[in-house]
Length: 238
Image (cartoon, rainbow, N blue to C red; front, side):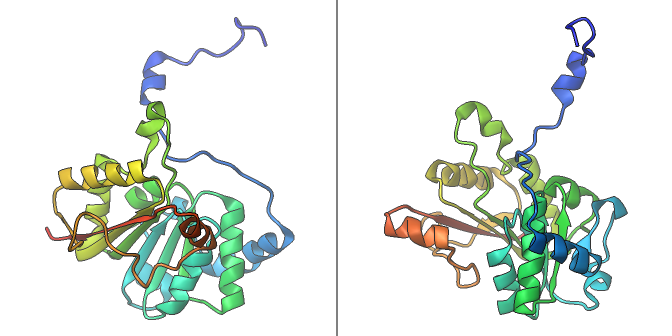
């Protein structure tokens, strides 16, 4: 295709093109992940295209709801759900192999209190999750977008925090964790500017890793090497 034949994208469209906080790195699913998707997506999968979700109906019960954004391969997400069976866990992940791995691990551990989306979390929050329906929102180790010119891609920003506040119940918790100190400082600044939240830390801005967040192998290795991890927990107070 020559330059003359290439479609021209209007500058206005380029300016309004959505800036995403993730890059779609779609690898091939293993046979086990494909099997898990085939067998368990019908009962544990949620579809963004279906719009607003009735979580009590989706889980078959009324229970506190924990939502995790970007659960990766789902190991710690499933382990948390197993440790807190009295809660309903909703996970959002854009990468298909991670969703398949999550469902396979849930089967392995006999965990049934999880439901998952394979979609962009920003769109799921806006289109599917009811206001004041969540008891806890978890955002663990989001892409820090290290380079300054990429900072605009970071998911933690004013519009995102406003949406989290809208979806949390009064008194609900917003828990973030990162292993990139500049991003932790960015998170603190964004939350200080946000309305309706109070930091639960008793000293400084950060809290010790809470018992409900499992220590990952990656994190344990980092600790042995002297790397830090910063946890922040904010409560919606208004």
